[in-house]
Length: 209
Image (cartoon, rainbow, N blue to C red; front, side, top):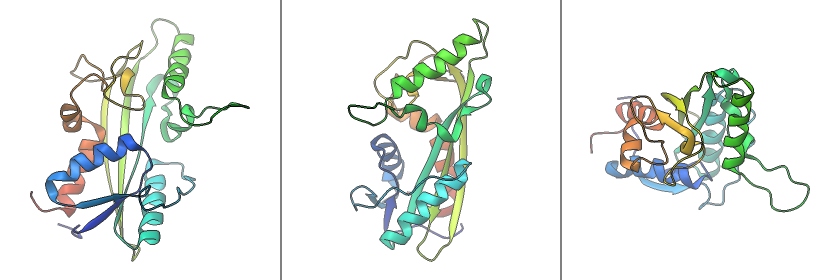
């Protein structure tokens, strides 16, 4: 085991869906989680060009601000027919760019953008895709560790299911028939990109529950 993780941990995210998944994965290990949002920490600018760079930016900012170990997740959807876009810009594709009215993220808008680009390629477009999750664990003294996972599958249309978040309603994992938004959350936690990355983090930093 590399540097062990114990006590309080800041989950460096303001995304409620990610927070729920990470907290559920950490629950068996007795780690006391607190979110960056609960601590009132600002969201740093994600200026990296890779998942690893952005995860480290978020984890190190939270660890320094809170003076506690911090865990950040940077994840995204790579659509093979779209040259692996949106990739690190996964959340940006969901941003509403309205001149008037509320701003924020609209995931159905993002899914529609992907479907529209695939439709332009015709009925035989490659609909394969994969999710990537990079977990960055950082300590206030500057030490950090990275763990990455992936899950491959295909994209379906129209979106199905209400249990997931982000692009989950259009993603069907390889070997399954239901979308990530249709399957039981516990099953998703066992097969997802985040689950694979988390298993690597557990092996490196957490004792058996």
